Length: 290
Length: 163
Ligand SMILES: Cc1cc2nc3c(=O)[nH]c(=O)nc-3n(C[C@H](O)[C@H](O)[C@H](O)COP(=O)(O)OP(=O)(O)OC[C@H]3O[C@@H](n4cnc5c(N)ncnc54)[C@H](O)[C@@H]3O)c2cc1C
Ligand code: FES
Ligand code: FES
Image 1: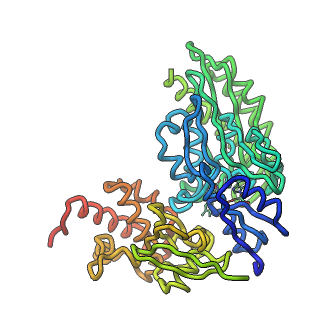
Image 2: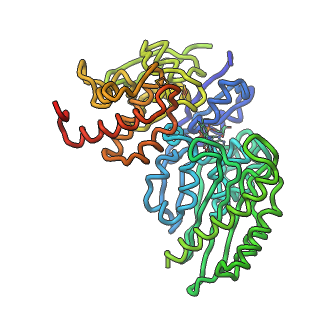
C-alpha cells in the first residue's frame, strides 16, 4: 500500500480520466464497506482509489417518468428512508436494508454491492427481479445495461477499467405490480446469505399473474435470473400447482457450493422454499396495489 | 508518498490532520487527533467498537478513509458528554452496570445516541436490531439494552428521573 493515491473527482468525466490514466490498479470507492476490508487484508492492492461521492447526483434518489433513479453511491440508510421508493419497490428496499449493520447501512451502496460481485450480495437478486438497469459511464459515453449482465463471476464484472456505474434505474410500475426479497441466514442479523430469492410480479384485475421475474442469489457463481421460475408463475393465481412448479424450477437452476453456511443439498432445498415464500409476499403486495 | 492535509469538524470543533491515502478515519482519530475513545476491535466492520457519527449517519470509522473526513462533521464518544455532565446514556450505562471491560462501550454509546437521535422511543426489538452491529464479549447485551431504553425514557420525560 506504499504507493496508494486517492482522488475525489468532481465530475464523471474527471473520474473516467483518472481511471483510464492510472498506472496500476484503480479502484472506485463508494461506501468502502467492501473495499476497505479488502484493502486492510491485502486482498486488493490498488495504486489509486477514485472516490465518486463528490460527483453531483451520485448520491440521491429521484422519481423520473414514474420510475426511480438511484445514484450509484446512495447509502442503504437513505434508500430505507425513501417512503415513495419503499411503497413501489418494497423488495429492492428490504433487500438493500438487509446489508450489514446500522453502521454498514450508513455507507453501503447498490453499486458497491453489485460490483464487489459476491454471489451472495443481497440487493442484487432483488434488483434483477425488479428489472433494474445500471447506467455505466466510460470514455465513449454512457451505456445502460440490465443488472444481471454486470457481474460475470465471483469478484468479476463486465465493466472496463475506465468505466463505472453512475446510477440505477427502476422502471415505472404497471398497476398491481410488486416485489419481495427473502434471504436465509443461520441467525437473524449480521450474516451472509445462504440463499436469497427476489420475486417481482404483475397481476391482472382478476389476480392472475401476467408478468414475473425471479432471481436467486448465493446458489451459483452469480445471481441467477430464472426464466422457468417466471414461467411457473405467469398465468397462475399462485395455486399449489404453480408453487410446486416454481419450487422445482428454482431447485433445478441452482449450482451452489458447499461451505460452512450450508451444504449443496440444503441450499437447493432452501432456494425452492424461499422462492415460494417470496412469491407469496409479492403476490399479496401486488394485489394490494390496484 | 506525500501526506494529505484534511480539514474537518470533530465534536463541534475545527480539526485538521495529515494522513496517508490508505489510513482509516479511526487511525486519524486515535493516532493524529489523540481521540482514543473510539476502539479498534476488528477493523473489518464487524464489531462496532469504532462507531462514530458522520454528518448525522452512524458509521464504522475503520471502514471510512481518513481523507473522506474532509469537510464533514464527526461526533465521537468524546463529544457525547456535555462538558463534565455525563449524557443520560452514559449515566444509565453506569447505573445498569452495562459494561464490564468497557472496550465495546464507546461504540455502544455512540450507536445508541444515533438511535435516540433518530427514534426517541425505540421498542426493545428496534434497539436490539439497531445495535446488532455492536459486539460485546462481557455483558450478554441485556443490561446494555435496558440502559438504552431507560435513558430513552428519561430523555423523553425531559428531566433526570427519580433524582
Ligand atoms: C460487517 C459487514 C456486514 C456485511 N453484510 C452484508 C450483507 O448482509 N449482505 C451483503 O450483500 N453485503 C454485506 N456486506 C458487504 C458490503 O457492505 C456490501 O457489499 C455493500 O453494498 C458494498 O457497498 P459499498 O458502497 O460499501 O462498496 P465499496 O466498498 O465502495 O465497493 C465495493 C466494490 O465495488 C466497486 N465499486 C464501488 N462503486 C462502484 C461504481 N460506482 N462503479 C463500479 N464499481 C464500483 C469497488 O471498486 C469495489 O470493488 C457486509 C459488509 C460488512 C463490513
Ligand atoms: S473496529 Fe471498526 S467495526 Fe470493529
Ligand atoms: S464490556 Fe467487555 S466487550 Fe462489552
